[in-house]
Image (tube, rainbow, N blue to C red; front, side):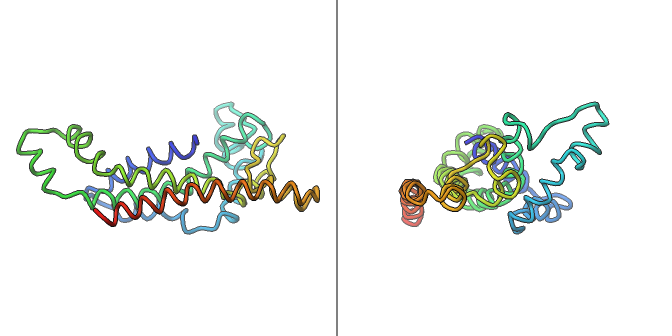
Length: 214
């Protein structure tokens, strides 16, 4: 939930920035989107190295300021390490969706608002946000579905540890079935997992249908 809301806010702010033309716009936009096309396993391996005690974030940078953080070995910090990686990877994807949503807002609304003397924030709150309501719902539902289906990141980096602090549903299903051989329990969790994803998928389909009828 934390990562989804942070991603939505960051992605929307970035979409507003990249809606305007400026120097090196394509370079920065591509740089932010680049993590999206990388496989999660490779990303998890790289970030796992960066989070280690001898890694870049822990040793070469933070210790210069006398700070030492147990990124993957603290039950309190490890979940936020997962959130940080997820934000880094997925923000670019939702940024593109928001950019598409901004482009779908009729420019005549903004022109009429400028004629009436509306400033940037008034146009943002009274035109942009209401017109992009379905886009925000779509991004939220998609984020929930992707978060439910998250597995490689947690399994590669921590295997659900320490102390199950980063154990998501997919990791729990895998462990119960293939490590503890509790196939019945794992199957029951899988059914609940499927029903949850089905619920959010139906919502997503209804959003797509409502947008196509506009």
